[in-house]
Length: 327
Ligand code: TXA
Ligand code: MG
Image (cartoon, rainbow, N blue to C red; front, side, top):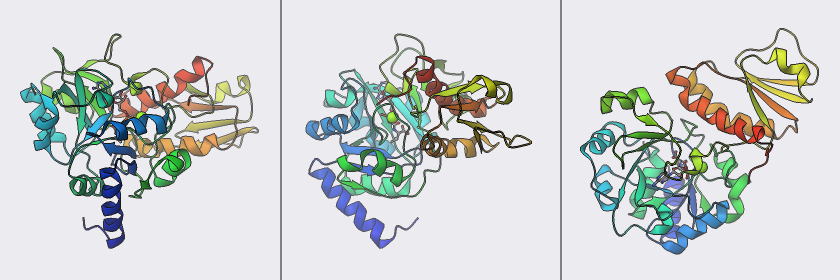
């Protein structure tokens, strides 16, 4: 892909800001990231301040090329190279033993590091122009819904960033799959567009799933990725409508036969990828309606829906605990 002159200029300016320790929000194929020079402790601390994120939650370091993995990790297992060859650039983050020089600010003091080569051409061009690793969480205030457009970033963190590069809406729309390869067995910490099935093909067996006592990962908290309006998951919305406070919003794959008073209906795509791409933008839109509750009809429990179901489950968890508002 050829980048337009104005995008190339934005990238050059952004690389300058990063070299001076500033923050830049950039598009990736998953969600927008809030990036800083991963070798500059003060710049990395700025990310935590901007997001309101606890300092012990580690950040993913974004790289421009597979070959850079060795600069950031050590004791890299052969399977990590195979997975990187197969899925990078792309929506897969690998957790590996960290190299000695890696800052504690990036890893939250853990002995591991999350690495990913993103697929968006703008991000790859930015990484090349910058010439180093970029530590970047999703570009949203801690606990909220990840941004999938530049406008979402500006709405949440516009005041805190030196520049926002607009690369259009994210193609995947959900955060990367996170696979922990630092222990005895590969462990899936967060499902994403690279499915457990696709990982199993490369690993020879499905990865283990998240258990208690796992490494700290804010995206692994039960209540995360939450809109402000309480969200409830149901198999079918209609029987629930009279039991819940109105006005209500419903997210479902088909419309009711007739309009229902006190209820705004949002039809979601039947295709899992299209649903994932649309999910966060729709949640933000519904959040702005001032409804008392969002009722979401759960998509099927099949592999292709694992990432969508995971994010919906986390969004619903904050409502269960009576904490609709996370910051
Ligand atoms: O798609 C994505 O992964 C996006 C884009 C910007 O790359 N990034 C993203 O970052 O979602 P963040 O920080 O919002 O979520 C990354 C998750 C967090 O839950 C973090 O705790 C976990 O990755 N993580 C990072 N390093 C880790 C490590 N060493 N061990 C365990 N979990 C780690
Ligand atoms: Mg995040």
